[in-house]
Amino acid sequence: MNSKSFDMCEGPLLKNLILYTIPIILTGVLQLLFNAADLAIVGQYCGELSVAAVGATGAIINLIVNLFIGLSVGAGVTVAHALGSGRDEDVRRTVHTAIPTALISGIILTVVGVSGSHYFLGLMGTPSDVIELSATYMRIYFCGITSGMIYNFGSAILRAAGDTKSPLYYLTIAGIINVILNIVFVRFFNMDVAGVALATTISQTFSAVMIIIALTRRTDNCRLYLRKIKIYRQQLLRIIRIGFPAGIQGSLFSISNVIIQSSVNSFGSVVLSGNSAAQNIEGFVYTIMNSFHQTALNFTGQNYGAGKYERLKKIMIICLLLVFGAGLTSGLTVYLLGEPLLSIYIPDSPEAISYGLIRLSYICIPYFICGLMDVATGLIRGLGSSLLPMIITVVGVCGMRISWIYTVFRIPEYHTLESLYISYTISWTLTFIAEIIVFFVIYRRITKSAKAAAVR
Image 1 (cartoon, rainbow, N blue to C red):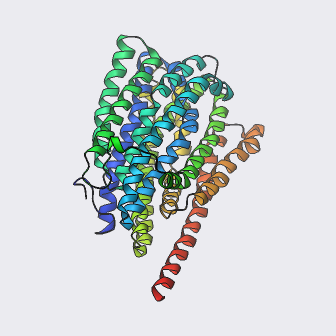
Image 2: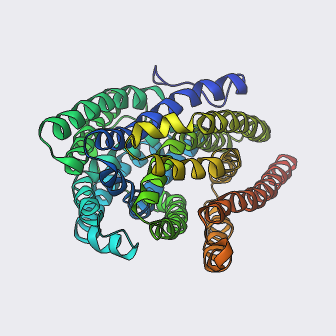
Image 3: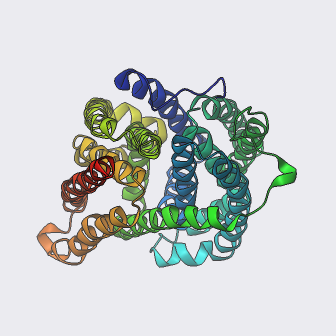
């Protein structure tokens, strides 16, 4: 085992789950700081329209990118299963298949993002006073998306192998580079949103290079040999089988957010600015909770692969309790500190801040329910079932939100931001209930089959 990794199938679960998750939380927070630095710096030096321009790109970028991010999840689960069951050759082939898959994914995303940015923003009803700035940001961002793909695939492999610290170290350095370049490009070269997009691209490239170096220096079966990079058909199919439904789920999830973003856009650029800043702030809460999703995914994957089914239910209980506590604490903290936090992004618009506070009050306080939902998704996917959580999410999250927007939200007295935001909580709750039921059904089927095999 590599010196930076630890065994997920042995030892005390509570301690190991916490130690494994903390670096993921810190890594995710640093990733968010990329965008936070973008918004804060353009807010300080360029004004609220630039903040709105960067914020308007978030939903559409996630929609386009999430399909391929799902494949990185598939790579991680495939590596975790192979490691848990001791299939060394499977591990090696998956690692060497994942990297060229990331490269191809990045090239496709670059073509789609650069050529279609203005069109996609127009479909979302982006206000005319910010659409050109938003399109500029997106084009430059997608020029560097291949680096983001390599980082995500590489990080998924390292985490599946039990190493959550290396991605944290590399992203820490990349985050510092990003902030410095933001200030240089925006403050001294007056590049506005183009400057922050370029800074993000350069810093992501650095983190991708470091991830590749880390994989080439490993001493276990996850070691990457650049000359042996090749797409192995069987491993690619496994990655797609698990990752494609995860990507579809992420993209469809983003579709509901795009529709909600379009509804927010209809209220004008001031509301859009406050909403964008609030989204960025609440993203830190989501990142903390989503880290437990990744922990549940990889611990479940390795223990399932090793046939240690008695640990699966314990993993579920501990992860749900941890994400509940982390989500409730961080959500309340962000809500109570909402006004000073929003002032960092939009110091020149009290009206925009007031709209941001509305979003924080409706999203952050019950945000822990979203964390419970994500952990349940990770548990199911860790068992190798990726289609079911996709279907549940499509119906429970996407279907519910879209139905809400085209029914309740269209009623004049409910055509408000408050009515729009409440749809989040309702969709999280319905989806979590359905997913936890599905987990128990799959778990019982697995344990029943294991007992029958033991008897035979």
